[in-house]
Length: 147
Image 1: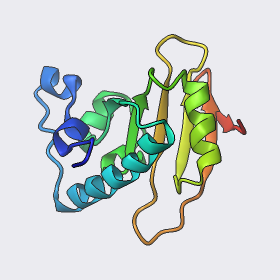
Image 2: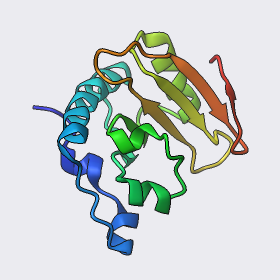
Image 3: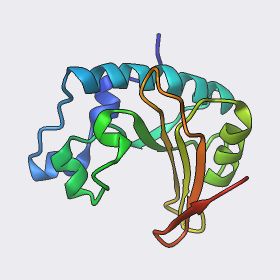
């Protein structure tokens, strides 16, 4: 039984507060199923510890409401923002995923100096070669990062 659900990956307090229907279409739903399989690999790398998903799928209206870029993989159901406090801080999480061999498209260490830090992981569409970009931001500007 998977540790993640479509309900979990589509839940959004912002969508609820703003009355935005964050229901994925068929393509996004298929991508979410793929994302769930990849998240299971991430969870295994993190010692099978529970992951706290703060953002998964975002319809275009929700993505705009939270200030996401229009090209965000969240809109396609291929990205998740999360923490895993039982494993460690976000720096440690990114290091583990980076060294794991997981085929991520983007791995981003978001604001590691803030208590609200999180990890963004995005996956390439199935059949597409992942870029394996590892990035960091502390100010909103992204730069290459090697743990």
